[in-house]
Image (cartoon, rainbow, N blue to C red; front, top):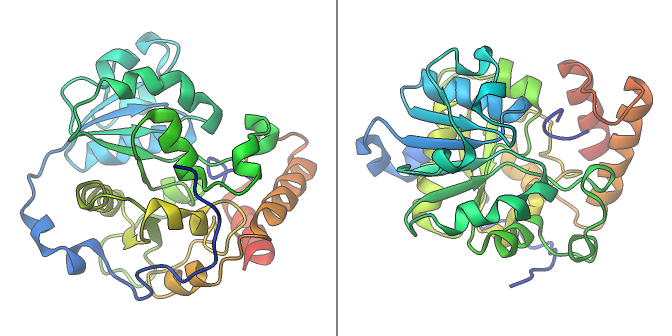
Length: 285
């Protein structure tokens, strides 16, 4: 099950650097004074990218959406709340942030677009490694953290966000701030600017943002870990990150992918929301 359905670093098992719940507003009060509109380019309009285009446009941001086939192939429902369909090259011009919502194995292909961005443009990656889809990536299989592999391909670090929530939950389970059942999403990043903006945008999509530390620690939100597609609250998320097991996570990831493929009859169709969350909680927690 994917989250769309749901220098090299090594996996490690030390506690995350922020073991207590911290929302972006509580930790970073200056974010309340940030400008209200962020210029965002989204590369990829599949399950996750489409929902992000809808939610971030509805939140008042200027959103440009692109795919690999051209703006004329982007469906009208992706643009229903104000996003504009553009080419991939246009999506990365005059923006504050770019969200990469493409399969992991597509990131090297779009790296030239990212290479031309100004240094202060925030790059946010939503991808996950699934060998049955992406092909075997030796470095990740050997223990390199996915986000560090991504940084190598792009030539710069990218904040990690929205990767560990299933597409159905992302679309349907956002809640207003302070809601008791609001789901929390971890955000990992190496720079304060990347972390701050990524966390603010997560909040704007209807979820509590949690500072999950650096990219080297982002393995704790990779497929197969306790926080992955399990729809946890801000009170529950830190413990799930802390108990992640680097050795078992890939095995659990592959078990979930096999169970989903058996149920759905293939490895691309996403199951319904409740079934996905139940399976993830049984296998990952």
